[in-house]
Amino acid sequence: MSEENNSNNANNEGLLIVSEAACKSVIDRPSAFTAVENVFAAMSRGDAYNFPVIREAIGYADALYGFKSGFDRAGKSLGLKSGGYWPGNAAKGLTNHQSTIFLFNPDNGKLRALVGGNYLTAVRTAAASSVSIAHLARKDSKVLGMVGAGHQSTFQLRAALEQRDFKKIVAWNKDADRLSSLQEIAEELGVPFEAVEREQLCAEADVIITITSAFEPLLMKEWIKPGTHIACMGTDTKGKQEVDAALIASATVFTDEIAQSITIGEAQHAIKSGAIKESDITTLGDVINGEHPGRRSDDEITIFDGTGVGLQDLAIASVAAKLAVEKGEAQHISL
Image (cartoon, rainbow, N blue to C red; front, side, top):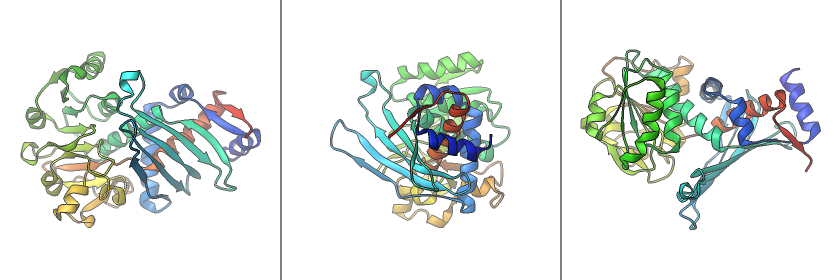
């Protein structure tokens, strides 16, 4: 059955409901990687675009809440992700990040699917950093550095380990006890693991992933060795910051979307200080499409500013909805 017929049949049967459990059943890391890589390429070609992001502190429960939306002409994905960050959820046994993805039929505007967004957000964010590692990290990278040990970090670690032949993992977290979740994955996969201070992490790591909610730089320019690739994945709001602005200015900077990078991403501080210009930032899609060479030398420091774009969510949710229908794991209701 064609994808178009699948879409039409799903539309005729009513609204699709794709649960968190169904998403976990049908989406794995390779499918997430492909979906994110394809949408980055489509954005670079001008076949897909994101709408302006809305993200606000709601003044209750210390929560951040907002919307990410967009349209992919090539993949016919139209919709939005609604959700945010509730820092008190972990104490309640819930994931701090909560979201739901809404997919609409671009031919008629009807709501097509409601898709659980928590698992998909985690795997698509990990896929984004792993796509950056695949295209920008040195091929001989041997040591992976992890900064941050929250829920998202475990997804990041598993995805990153598939992109290079890493021989060691070094990790830092403000609360060192939380590093146990990363250590368990390292032991499961047979990769040596060491908890270290940030300066030592930077001295050893060939690839570094930062995945925190920091509002101050955790990594400084003078700590980073030549040839390092850094995927900054935690900064997605005005004011957040994970690395020194001087480090951004000294590196070759890539991003998922430039408009978000300079306003809510890691580059916002270097832009504000005048250390870099918007034209100094390249989309990762340009590298994927062969419009930019990416890394030019083994000594070059590369940074991926992963701000998290709505099109990533729509792309992976569309794949999840399609596979859930094919495997009989989606529910249908009438509005």
